[in-house]
Length: 309
Image (cartoon, rainbow, N blue to C red; front, side, top):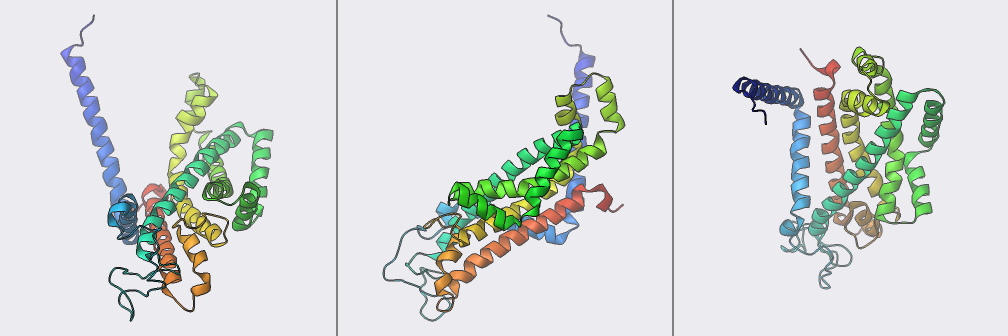
C-alpha cells in the first residue's frame, strides 16, 4: 500500500478549506443581496412560520380538525359577541374549529406546492434540456406541444384534466403540474440555448463528454438560477390553483381541511357568518404573498444583472 505523503495531505486539506471558504463566501453574498429586499425577508419569516405550523400542527392545533361540536354551530370569533374562548376563530356550519382546520390546512397547501413544483420542475427541466440541446425537429415538436398547452387558460385546462382523471387531491396536483410544466420547459430551453455554444461546453465536447454528461453535468448547473426563481413563483401558483379547484369541488374533497375546500363548504354562509370564508381566504392570501416576496428576493440574489455593485 502506498502511503499519502504529508505534503499531499496538506494540499488536500488546503483545497478542502478553500472550498469551504468559497462556499461560505457565496452564501454570504447570496444573503447580502437577498436581505437588501426587506419584503423578501418578511416573506421568508412568514413562510418559515407556516412550515413550522404545518410540521407541528398536531401540537399547535387546539382541536381535532374533523371533530364536530354539536352545541357550537357557527360560533363567531372570540372577540365578537357570542364567541367562546375555546374557539378563537369560531366554528363552521357543522361545529368544527376553524383555527385547527386552518393549521392543518397548511400541511395540505405546502404538500401540494412541493409535489406540484417537483413534478413540473423535473419534467420541465428534462424536456427543456432535450429541446434546447437537440434542436431541429425534436425542438420544434416539443415547443409546439408546449404552445398548445399554454394556449388554454390554466385553470380551465386544469379543470378539464381533473374531470378526465376524476376529482381528488392527487389528480388535482397532477393536473396543476401539467399546466405549470411549459413554463419550466421554455425557461430551461432558453437557458440551454444561451449556454450550449459557450467555450466551456465546446471544450467539454472536444474532451469527449457524451450528450448526457453535457446536458446534465455541464450545461444544467449553469441554468439553475432562473429555474429556482420560477419554482418559487410556481409554488404559489400551485397553492392558488389547488385552492381554486377545491373551491369548485374538483380538488381535495370534504372533510379534508384544505383551504379551498373550506371556502367551498362556507359559500352559503357568507352573509350569515363572515368568519367561515374570511379566515381561509386570508390564509391563502398571506401564504401566496409570502412566497411571492421570497421569489422576488431570490431573483434579486441570483440574477447577476440585478445585483448592485
